[in-house]
Every structure is written in structure tokens, then in C-alpha cells.
Image 1 (spheres, helix red, strand yellow):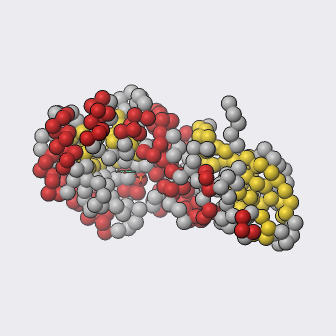
Image 2 (image 1 turned 30 degrees about the vertical axis):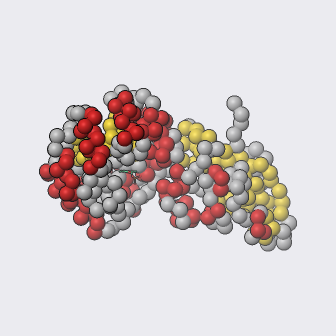
Image 3 (image 1 turned 180 degrees about the vertical axis):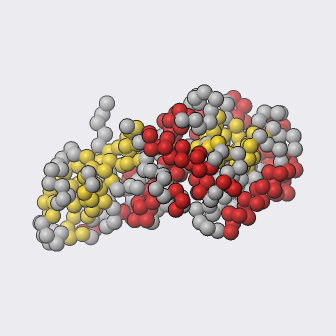
Length: 343
Ligand SMILES: *Cc1c(COP(=O)(O)O)cnc(C)c1O
């Protein structure tokens, strides 16, 4: 196999431990949002690893994503968050996945074409993105609802919306028959067990994202971008490095040029702020992030040379702080050039 000089090292035990913490904290069944290819980590592997520790409910956005998961382990189930449009009916009838119906049209389509087959339903409680309005709840009569969902718009903040949405959802749940009820994403789990209902739907925190302070110290990093050194050079005092000559060496500086750049999702907002690491020694970025390369100051690591690997600083809460990107974007923006390697 062709050698790849760029990879995303993935820690399976960390993923599983994060899921266990979320499940324990919620005190009810925990599913997993594996949309966007498992937030960029690889949905097939994530699903297998989480099924191994007891996760049974997986959530994707589209039917194409459900199909890409392949056969699910054991009695695991997948639900499609965007529901079912006219062109999705073949996939919906052919496979094991069930839709999360979001609109009156979707409800009518499902009733007309799928009889009593179980489905999930999303009701809107204030986010005004997907989901049935409160005046459409009556349309649900006659559906075999597995899980009734809603989604919190502000769970990562202390916002009055959280209580409002929770109470609205509890009121709807009292009047709609379903096997289970669910409203909490990762941040919602941190809000307390009032938000657990019967099932929670974490995503970000499984993958090492810290959505709220309550999760700090419990959620651990899962994904570690690593890249090879292409060249090591000494930049003489007074010379610059990289596009725009934005960085100038104040003293002779040892620099390594690394095989990662903005085309890999390591974006230019890390310029002047990001770092790599050799063991515990930080190696700060110098100059601009290029398309396929960055430069780092390796004065602290005299042993590093061509072909050696370094790990980028990519702890999600800190990398978000440094870059101004969200923890979600930091994961889902990583390109397919990074080989996903679970070790
Ligand atoms: C993506 C998503 C989740 C997971 O959210 P996180 O913030 O990543 O935990 C849960 N529910 C719905 C409806 C989603 O779209």
C-alpha cells in the first residue's frame, strides 16, 4: 500500500469510555450520532466500537449515510434524521433504517406508503429547524412511533431556552404515544437528568468534544492528527518563512516543514497560534499555514528529521479556543487525505 505521510490516530478505548461516561451521566439508554461519517472519524468503525460496548441506536442525517454504514451489528438500529422525501421511499422500504419524520408531508407519505411500520418523529420545541409544529401533533395519530424526538438549540449555554424546550417537550410527550422519548445531545446530557427522558443522542462528546464545563475532565481526546516531516532546515536570523513572509526569524531558527495544510482541514486560522508536539515539548507554528504544508519551530527537538512524525495540538476545546472554529468543524473539516488509523 502506498505510504501516507498524514494520518488521524484514533483511540478506540477513549471513544468507548466517552460513550460510557455519557450513558452513566444520563442514566438511560445512550445512542450515538454518527452522521457526517462519524464526525469525520469513520462511521463504520465508530458504530462497531460503540455497538461492542452496548450502544444500540445510531443516528445519521441521510439515507446514503445509512446505506454506507452497511449491515449493523446485532440488534443495533439506525434512524435517519432528515426523514423521508419522495425519492427516499425505496431506500426506506428496502432497508432496516427508520426515518425521523420531520414534516406533515413526511408523516402523510409514511402513513400512505408504509402502513404500520415503525418510525421516529421529531417535534419542534423552539429551535425552528426540523420538526413538526405543535399544531401538527394531531397528525401523528395512527403512527407506530418508536422514538419521539426534539432537539435543543442552546444546550451548550445556560439559556432559558433549555427549560422552555424541555417543558414543552414533556407536555408533548404526555399527549403522544411512543415507545421512547429523547431530547438531549451531548450538551443536553450535561444539563442533568431532567433532560434524559428514555434515550439520549450524543455526538460531539463521543469524539472528544467538551460541550459544557460539566464534561471537562471526563471526556477525553479521541482524534490525534499526525504528520510527517518533509524537510528540516535552519532559517538564518532576519529571513522569513512561508507565504507573505509574515514570520521572520529573530535568531537562527531550526524549522521543520510538515505534511499537513489547509487542504487537509488544518485551516489558516491556526497561523501564529497552532503547535505540534514531540512528546510533551510544544513546537509552535511559524509563518502561514499553506495548502499542504506548515512550518514548525523544532529548536526544542534536535533529534527530529525528515520522515519523523509529529502530533498536532488538537485537543478540541483548546483547539477551538485557539482557532476560533467550533469543535464540530475541527473534526468534520479534516480531509480524507488523513488516513484514519485506530490503534
Ligand atoms: C447531531 C445531532 C445530535 C448530536 O449532537 P451533539 O451536539 O454532537 O452531541 C443529536 N441530535 C440531533 C437531532 C442531531 O442532529
